Image 1 (cartoon, rainbow, N blue to C red):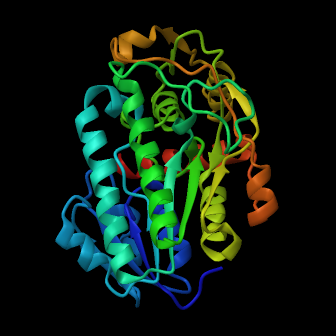
Image 2: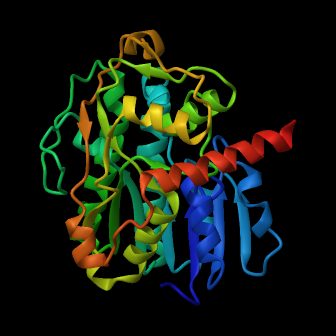
Length: 331
């Protein structure tokens, strides 16, 4: 694992980013760049007085701020982005602007400063509607029409990947790309702009029905945040990873109906019943659903030595308890 480095984590006060910071600060100097548009100071305050920790409050769209953050850094972990399906359909311009131009600012500053490695947080959204399950890194992108805003996030991350590969070819830029599949765990936001697991947990712990969009038979594979962070650190540590894309996820496939029932069971809220609503009722007309999304992680196993350790059931138990304790603390 990385040791004795100066590292930058963009979005380091966010969900995955803050967990990454927790691991990195043990052996490295850590700079966090975050505009707190979705991240929280609560996620990093326990590290703020530690030696070697620096916080820069700023936007990745601001070139001068980015240059300041990257100065003298050895490794960049670029986690900052506008994420969440509801964001995609409600504010596609913000998604495209931040994710494309912000990332380009980071790439330029990193190239200028000669960073040793640039670890980029991409997404399973890259694959779109491809139903060749499990999805491998070489599989085609299958998207809907451009007037459907739901696809803007996938497109923004694909543009980023194209830029990174072009910089790799032109300048030998030391990039590693990680396509995360449905990461969940403590510190993930519970607003309607967040992921399905924290939204379900929030509602169930309040005694409310989890709202399942569509028939609930669509499937996903969820990875616990500590496993995703482990894969990220391995990618930053392995020289063989440079110039490569890796799926980061679990192959434990579950329907959304099953997920809702499992969360209800683990939360001990058996009186709560799921409720189904049409996709358009929540997202509006600019949305398309994806029926199955499960990664092939053999490449990460082979090159990075990565294998997720946390089952969905165990990860949900930890996550539910974290949210329950947080809700009690606020009462």
